[in-house]
Image (cartoon, rainbow, N blue to C red; front, side, top):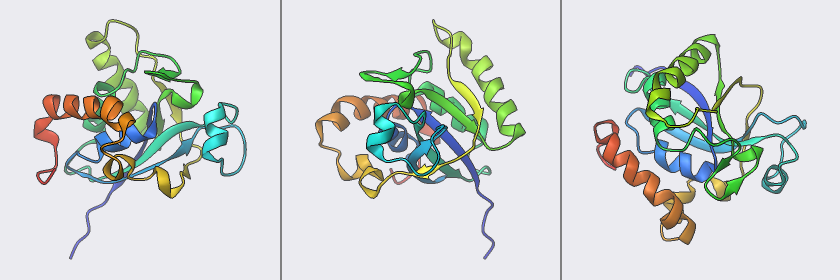
Length: 182
């Protein structure tokens, strides 16, 4: 049996629980792992350290996807459409550099695609897109309690108030991109 070559993307859109829940529903996305990237403090940071805003890390997800089923470009269109990429260092009530909108590119091709998608999508936003585009330098996986958060806690207040509206938007705008069993 031939296995299909997967690619990786590392994306931050505020709280990693939100973007994890959204991207897990996309056809072609094989796995989504919550974690931290982009920090200036060496070593594996804790959730508490990242939440302090002092490490420079962003809450992100590492996405493994099949480019034959969803392109990096299309992944970025969904990403930019399901959070507010025009707010600097915040999403909703979450504030600080750890909640910034960011695309950590894995290579020059991803960087070029990211910049192109941002330019292409800018006319759809009333404010300037401030999503950071930076090279990936590290990725630290978050603790197990932060993985699959929405799937394990769909009735939690945060999930119902913050994540459910993002999922409704995803399902409305990108119904043709969703996994068939979701």
